[in-house]
Length: 438
Image 1: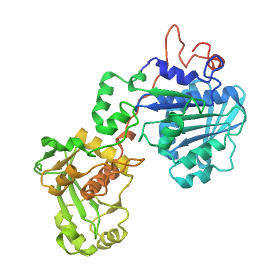
Image 2: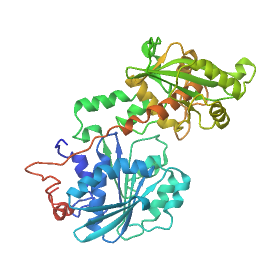
Image 3: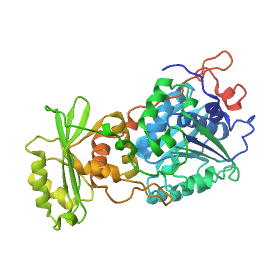
Image 4: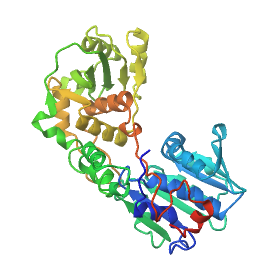
């Protein structure tokens, strides 16, 4: 691990609660801004340290969109650092419980996933001395407010971090814009606030996003998505001729429809790139006649043309059509992941990076790229439900087979080594909790 000093913004996150800090009397801290800016790691270290400075024998809540994402984003990078700081850490995965002890003190940290409205029931009845909500903007308001209501221990504090979303998002409206009223410290992060990121790495992330995603994830701004969903696909070089075989692998993605159009794309993999080589697109309204599941299946067979395909990724709501594919037994069928906004972000990044290419033989996909747009009104980002069938099948392919590029790597702020500021490896817990040397 490269040794790099903490930035001023990261140090503020680490020490805001310390007794000599002018912010120590506040009830909450909010860290938002750019991706990979080091806010999650610093908040995690700070949260655990605060918990042991203030309490012993208490319970705390660690919340993420899912427990899996919480472990990946927070627990996995923070635990090694806590152990180097002298903490003893025991995990009980079956109970979603983390037991930490240090200097004769012991506290319990429970892990919760807040992915939908029903998640609020998981946290009811508990009593906590503090809560950390990682990716809070991705959680429903009911879950967040239930978690905050559980913090009834004297001296409890709230810890929030997130990347920006729509400016009408409830968390932006109720917490960020009302931070002073809520007695919360608001800290806005940029990628430059993470000294572990080199200029080359920052530039690479800047190339990943366009439009609203660039403004949010790179500039850290709460902006509404407007205009074309994939504006860069209007460039002449956005589409390519189909490359010549051989391809090492094939796959199919499909958005099934009876009244609405049915769209399937044949993908071929060659030299690190998936190409959408051909398509089947049937609009029953335009053609004046509907097709049965069996007729769509025969069209799928003609599209595949005898090739050995890895799988057919299908709209998860198309249960009857997936049953037809399974009954024939020619192709493995996989229900697609269907998180729309996250899938659009992943697709935009894959197109920008050249991990997928759309061939100029896919005329209906080309047409939809030029027409697919965001809703202009509302309090959340939603694409217009028109001209979206090839767009959906491409999104299913990326989110299901390529996965999330965000899972592949992450940057961490590292220990400070400086004559004027000790490293976290050598800084005693007593010195750290006083905040006197930070």
